[in-house]
Length: 606
Image (cartoon, rainbow, N blue to C red; front, top):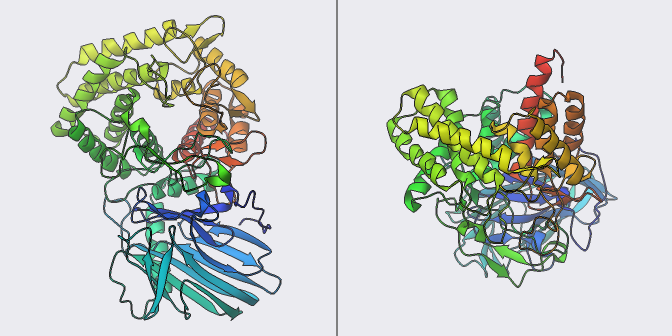
């Protein structure tokens, strides 16, 4: 359980790390230690925001359930669930607010089926003393409220498509009400959107109980016994909260435009399904016993590829192209970090690594389930042929540079993965295809990487084939079996990246924009996933103690809820970028699994 601490807003904003995540497989919300729901898009992750106080403290809107005169607060999750508790103290009393998106009773999160009830439950109870509880709902764009039955009917000026109703066990005067409550007294609130609101006799405790049960049944499938077990289990729930339960799509993060540097322009909309991020997510979940997510993702992504004729970099939850990227001129941005963006222009880029991501996901899934049916194979083999054709053509790379395309080493490496996995699958399951050609091409790409990407002066593999730039994504090559971790050139590359891209205390920059231009102004924080890749390389190179120390230090950067952002400010340790970020929680799981296996092999315990 996290410690009590006073709220310390900066520039009028709570730190990113002072927020917890809740969700229902259709959307997600961030709840601050101040009792405010400061981020929620409904009805889906990629819908316009209902509350976005996180991006504009004045006009963004929030749903607040908090005591007046708050002095300190703390947050924690109920065990093995996505039920979040925020406790807040005043000079006169203490109140507990429990937040959750109620799930359908009996829902099975291992199946691709909706579990959402399109509801947000906020349940407050006074633990001691007396508090004046403020209940205020202020949708972005303004709203009007009219008392109705057991609560308030809400008309959103900025979202005429939404039909909101806030039910309550205490009388509500409108959009803002204050009640004085004594120890043991409670206030239960249920916000519902786009549906029938004639609730009678809502059993709030039953809603919470059913939701806990659904999450805990799913968590019974987790098979992990290694370092940082509690954090790995929490990472699994966090990744599941980014999963669109209905069809297997997984968003990169639930937020948009949280800055990679305060005041900088590198602010992006991550509420979409990147093939790369989703494939990494299902691979991580698969490694701790949660394999059904891989099947859902495979079906979703191959349907999307069939519609377009080729893999896009990212999709909406429906497997379609996201809307054009646009700048929101009304919102000031988190701590006035403009611009706020909706949509993502990376959707129009070429990134050849998607072939390897999909094929490796299929390979891992087949290794567990022991089959690839002919229809699935007919779709997969096309990706291998495309990787063979395109690996020598420029693209925009894993980091989605906004310059002209280049021959990125990582992209070529993932084309090698696509070809290698295709050959393995065809041989294992006696499937038709250009097996010898695929294998020969894969071996050829491996040789090209070691020869053409090697820079003798840097003593490192480089960002591009033909040399130039240093890129921390090269640390992933041993993890995808493109280059052995203990190959002399990979050992040297690991050392060079740690030295030249190091941001201190084991943190790494993805690359240095001054040396590897990306077409963008400004700079960014240290990228957490890269440090987890460094953990894996050190461990595989025999430096197990150093790897464990680094892993523990990275895990210690999680907030008290076990959540991690995309990036860390090396100077302050503050969270940066969209949050929580799938990539970072993937690192927690994958590195934990790798270390656990190596520790066991060495006869050691975590």
